[in-house]
Image (cartoon, helix red, strand yellow):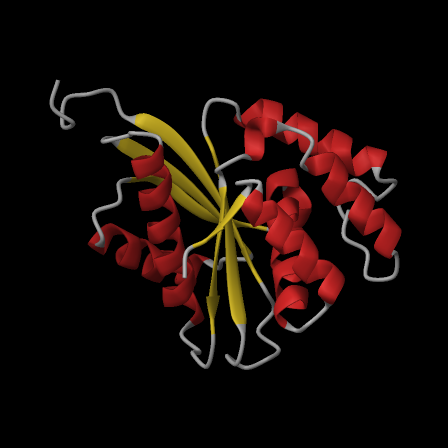
Length: 199
């Protein structure tokens, strides 16, 4: 059956970025892609937050390194996350909306290729995306031929998958800024096939 008539897979792409405090010197976008197992993954990540002793809506604690590490260890006990996390690092560029959209396009295209999905539609959830920015991001993504079911902004407090993306964005930033413990973790997650650098 040709892709145009095949049943389209349903993908959910959760997106978070690092803060813009570096004024474009360093900007990192992380995506987590889920399919039919999305609710199972949501439940699992909430359990990981509870196991790590963090608050339900804030597992990342700048003041508690052990809790942060315990959360990551608990979150990556499942094989559901293998091949679902993608990130891209940008330097000296300030067009944050286009960079976020570009990362979404690359992540969805990579995931679809690796999972042999010739036809799919994506629901895209981006942390903190305003209604005004939603239209601009949608146009960029559609221009690359990605079929969008929905695109909306949410706060990371509302979703454990967004919270995971937030944790990973901070972790990757720390690794780039020469925190050797963070760098070791990022390298391990890449070796284990959990996260992939799109750059």
